Length: 56
Ligand SMILES: [Zn+2]
Image (cartoon, helix red, strand yellow):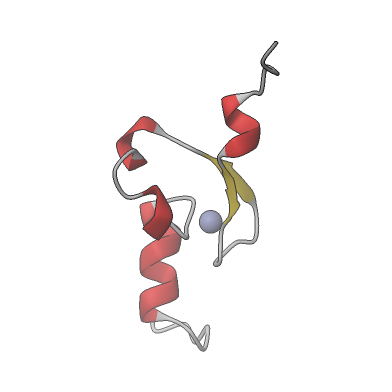
């Protein structure tokens, strides 16, 4: 008998920007290995403000 495993448990990562765990989404199906951020916002924040200096 095969063990049943939840897909969500297999596909959870921690966002490098906000540090929160986020779950796999269908839009990341092809790029899941490269996904490091929970959202587009976190991704751009990380890119533009690594030193966390506010420009605005
Ligand atoms: Zn995030």
